[in-house]
Amino acid sequence: MARTLTFAAARGLARSRLNCACSLTHIRSLTSATNENNINQHYDVIIAGGGAVGSVLARLLLNDNDKSSLSHQHRRPLKVALLEQRSSPPSLDNIANTSSKTKHTPNARAYALSPTSLSYLGPSVLQRLQQTNRLGIYDSMQIWEHDGPAQLHFAGEDLNEAVKSGRLVDLHGLIERNDQQQSNRRPWLGSVVEDAPLVSALWDELRNDERIDLIDNVQITSISAPSQNTMGNVEPPPPVEMSCTRSITNEGGSKQDEECTLSADLLVAADGANSFVRTTLGSSFPMITHSYDRKAVTCTVELDVRKGDMARTAFQRFLPHGPIALLPVWNSLNNDDNDAPIYANVVWSTTPSEANHLLSLSDTEFIATLNHHLCQGPNVNPPLLGNNNRGMPHIPIIGTIAKEMDSLLRTANTALTMGTWTESPSRNYFRMPPASARVVGPIMGFDLKLSHVQQGYTAPRVALVGDAAHTVHPMAGQGLNLGMGDVYSLSELIKEAVDSGMDVAGTGLFLDRYNQERMVKGLGTVGGVHGLHELFRCSGSNSSSGIMNANALNSGGNASGVESIVGLGRSLGMNVVNGLGPLRRAFAEAAAGAAFSR
Image (tube, rainbow, N blue to C red; front, side, top):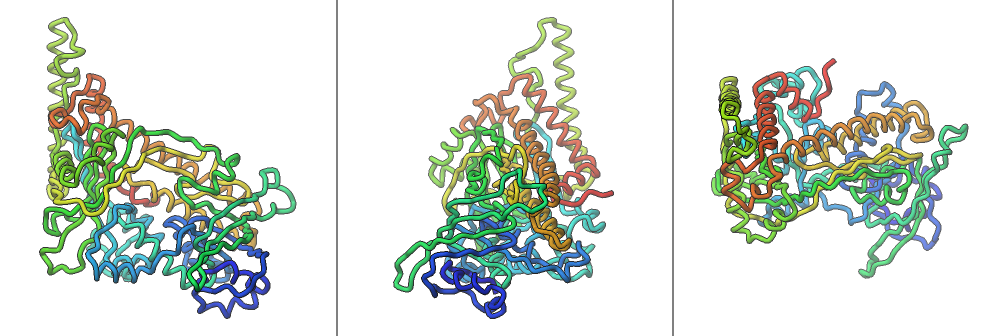
């Protein structure tokens, strides 16, 4: 099993790590045994941050079932340490048992994971999350706008070709480890997973592996990393060294701090958007940042429906100042209990003033506002030349022609929307999202910003992953999925280095490849999401069309002529994507993380 180490215990291990490794297989935690002050533990990889991203990286590094390398059966075992500032998470069984005995509701701190990201969790973690009913699976997605008729409908069938061709993992087969009758089951578009059960399931698996040291309640106080001019020399650069402090609780209940020095061939920063590793090595990792002037409001709600009414569907409606999403989460295991509550997560992005207004509402007022703005169907496009004939030419005949063109284009867009219904009525018809009955748990808000490393994800013997390297707007649900791609790419390159008999990060070869791969992907994703945000915010530049002016919103807003033209173009684009099967499937495959066909 993995060792949940105290630093005092590590003192004895530092002397004879190889001799005693076998005897530690069944040790879950070690207690203080000596009073020596100097500790020096060396690892191949130290991961700073034991959350979802760091834990998945640790799991991937220890996974020897990959088929990518012919020499994986003879791979040198990696020595890995996972450092976490907080206490180690409870086991998933404890969370599940507590939920069954108490009235437990889903937590709003959750992630929408793509099929590819879910596959990185591994079959055993996925199985346990499914067995404990912690997966909010969705195989349908409906997106629509407040100021136009356009709709986007994605379904699991859009991924059939990618699954059959092997470009996308078959999650049914991965969980059940059974390749039979795969063609009869609908692929998932994704799943909403709470942070706490996800991290607990990952740590449960890591605790059973003797190759990793799980060190909790630890704070990195200083980092000494080699400089850039050490790369490319005959001798590899020196390891990264870190000074750390760990808080421990004695048998009597009193707390004390232990200090140590750790070193590694590679330090991976998986410690979030406010990464201590990145900021400490700030000269190596300058950041590009951009405030969206937006704030997200999130909470969990109980729905005023029976179970089937969410229909494994993720709903998203674009309002003038940002999208509002209603996402399926886990629900009662008792399928015979028709009175069991049904829950969903809400993520609402809007301006700071409107977000603060939402946060100031009572729960009853919040639910009324939520239902009013979410439970509405598509609208008509506003006049292209603005309301009250703003921008209309004064020459009568030109004005008449402009009016007729305006009417023709808006009618054509509405007809295009209706035309998509003929492809598959069961997939393309608009479905009103279920109404919410009450808020369960706190309503939380957080500011939204874009950030991305300016020069690269790596420095000598250091690599950034996840939010330590980039943050994006949550509108496309790509934040954690982008981080999952980081850790998969990095883990594969580390294994390749080990299989080649090379130092994990002793040369720039493998870290440079990681940097090139992820910079392209990261900048592409961050730029794409930013572009979508700017495209959908065009109709919301007039503040009178926000959530505090319901009449303007219901009538399609009060947009100017330019905003109406942009809105119509966006609406036509949505209809084109929805109506052209190959194009829609390409978008669905990209969001799911499918490999490109060659």
